[in-house]
Amino acid sequence: MDAINARKNFEFINNIRSVNPETDQIYHFNEAEQKRILNESPWKKDPHYFTDIKISAVALIKMVMHARSGGSIEVMGMMQGKVQGNTIIIMDAFALPVEGTETRVNAQAEGYEYMVQYMTKIKEVGRLENAIGWYHSHPGYGCWLSGIDVNTQMQNQQFQDPFVAVVIDPNRTISAGKVEIGAFRTYPEGYKAPDEGPSEYQTIPLSKIEDFGVHCKQYYPLEISHFKSTLDTQLLDQLWNKYWVNTLSQSPLLSNREYAARQMSDLAEKLQMTANMASRAGPGGFGGMGSGGQFGKDKKKKQEESQLSKITRDSNKISVEATHGLISQVLKNVLFTANPHQNESSALGNPIDTDTVLSPAPGAQ
Image (cartoon, rainbow, N blue to C red; front, side, top):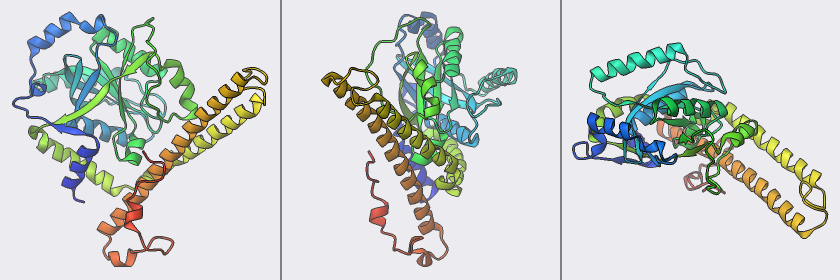
């Protein structure tokens, strides 16, 4: 697979839509129109005003490359764009020189100074869109907002709205082959979020579940889509060549081995916790739901099934990602080994069955 086909595959997996830059309003920046929208500020009257976010392919690859460069350390950057109806459009992104840790990232004075200088210079070369959001990485623990992220986003929406928060998980992006990304807006302080029912399930490490659960009702996700145009081709090719070389030269199984080990450890802890909860509940009910009553037994069974079903989904996810990494290595071996006929068997000495290798893993959705 060459770089061009790999980029096409990336665009297909991430559902990047092509648009005509001459006719599509997405590429036209009307400063007067943006000022009018800013003066009206309809989002102040409706906390759920923004429902969608469109991210250009150029901005997406920039953010993914930056997130991957940080490894296990969180990184942060800014996004430029505009508002179109109920949609926030991201045209470009740039990294901030901030120091993060494995659990948090905050922009300090140096980062703010760099941001101001960058925004001044970028407008001199025709990039007129204002800063409309920030992004940061969550290496290995999913796309959601922590307590610190919620506070940061609330301040951004209070003083420079419209503003959106984007989170990228570089580890899961490498493992799954598709960009793991989420976009969020926070509710105003004191606002009671409506009960929207169960959201799409995602794997959260046990060490992060409390932080996730405490703040999950303080923000809501936006529907994400991606776009590109023919005018982006040259820049997209240059960015992609760098991204493709990094992807090609790395093994997901090796570069993500610490992440995989943490996943297995987290899965074992969740299994142990579920077993302890079941044993503490006793025969009369789950967590004190009544002694011997049918209601208590039914609720106990449902809670046990709920916990075990989540653990099963986590387990399936781990196996699918491991299989994906193995397939990647097999294909690289077939494509790039000098004498492939010497490597037609697996490590166990059995012939490689490509139909089996390329078929979905059991439990994959």
